[in-house]
Image 1: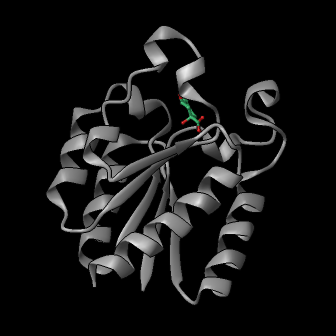
Image 2 (image 1 turned 180 degrees about the vertical axis):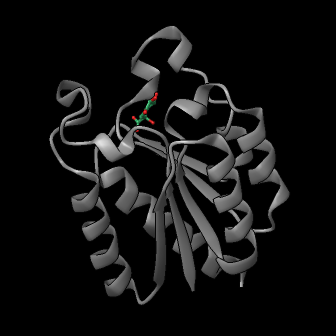
Image 3 (image 1 turned 30 degrees about the vertical axis):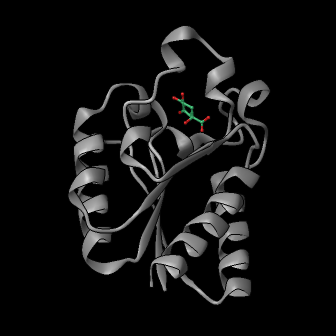
Length: 146
Ligand code: DQA
């Protein structure tokens, strides 16, 4: 099984970006934890980070051809992107949306996710653990569908 993990814009700045909101863990550290869990679960992961919407859409389309499931943090595009929603709907593999922070406890405009309705589930508010739970979730979902 191969799971595509797609990080959205500004997540490359984790560690220094608004540490009061996102903590001090870096993206490299999160990726390390994802890879360790993937190995323990016996699945492969392909991880990427993109700041631009088009590159994220390309990554989703590629995952639709090459992966069995997607874990995605659309970051700022969560709240605005019809195109990422459409890309997630267009591919024949399930996705789980992830957020480090609890977007439902933040600004009004941040509480709405454009992309979540195109996903099988959403996990947020647990920092880096959100990704690890999402990986377990997508693996279970794909296995159940096989
Ligand atoms: C985020 C939440 C988004 O609202 C924000 O734009 C991000 C990160 C999170 O992981 O908590 O960039 O997706």
